[in-house]
Image (cartoon, rainbow, N blue to C red; front, top):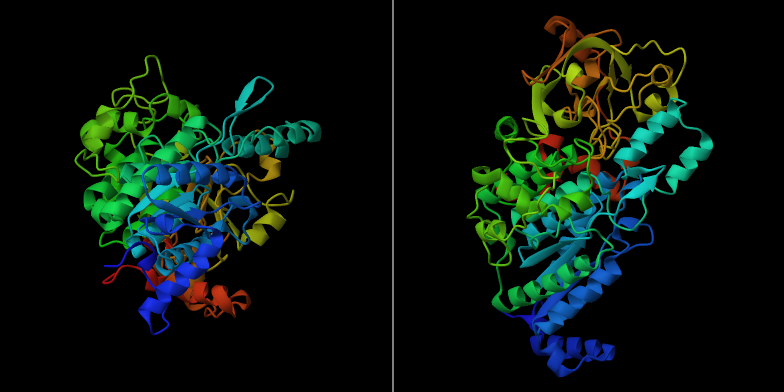
Length: 567
């Protein structure tokens, strides 16, 4: 098999000429024959002026290149799509699959013996890992790392759990315009991803648990020198992988590694988005995520990481307490320690090297957990025939068993227009329902599941209500919120049948979410639904591809044609 510059020659009908032409043009960059004869490590550049989460990527790239060259290989940096959560319209999830396709095709199209993917903000790491599995080239993943914490009036702040908490106070009239503006400048004091257990941190921890990144790489703060030393070490590992042609993702990712990732997802109080992304990642492999098995793990795996929004600390505290290796050590026999990693080590060796930090309380023992059950529970019922998810670790205990009257919003736009209407017929015991916010309905399954508490209730001190939708929510969010109701209302799911005043029963202990309306009435409502057509937004280009082929949340919201063969 050809390698280095000889790999994947452009087709001109003459292989010798193809290589001659390739070398002639690349020499215009000033490279010597010695450099061009080395194994090649491709390095993705996901920096963008629109993406402050990836603001340290240029420094990471320099450190990676140094590590690659110190180990005798040749680094080649190439750009891909960059997605930043708060800058992507309509949603970052809408663009995740496009980034996965872009990254996969660039890995295939350009000569490289190994690749380093650099990601962070929510959808970039899953997109890159999906691409890496499909391309199956030796891959090292580098998370950009979390921000350092902010401070306001003596209080530690973290984006974006505290964004939501303090914005809620502002909506309730507890904070004025001057103070909320001051907070706005203090929530994100450095580049990097959210420093709470949002989706970005969740995916970085999952990546480390899968064995696709270096130990401790999930938690090192983005501006710290250690982040760049880790990047240099990642370059060295990638150079060795380029020389030995492995291990490939297909050799690292096994049923055990996927189970380890699910255990870690539950134990960290991880983002509900992590379940969708892990499902999509697994579906690019021969394996799958079984929602029933995931729920069973949730009953067995306690939350051990004391981190917002499920606990109190922030990512830098998790890091200084020993990071993911220390967490896996505390999880003990819940983790398969024989699973391999890209460094050649097993997790047993990684865990053996975990730092013991006296007095730390960010990573608890199994005997003293934050929550006795895992972060997430999977719900079923006549409202969610194929499942829904609740982040029980960030919910209000008193609402985990609740029956209330439905207050229905037809869309995100409808919710935006009516939720703060003083005339809205709503009480604190009601259940807020948002539909047409799923993968197709929105489109792109926005993080709108964190429905705001209606202003007239917020101003009376209401902090939480049961809220249900076919949308997602940010991993930084908190509350008693049922998400990912599948199938979504836009494809005929039963969420589309709910009417104002219907009673809805949530029982997390029984793992159920039900609409208390008899089946005959539901059939009557179903018959009255208008047939779904192609929406105007989906008439052309990527939008058309998205609308025609997007899968539901229980299948990872990938495109149907991108799954591994046989799925």
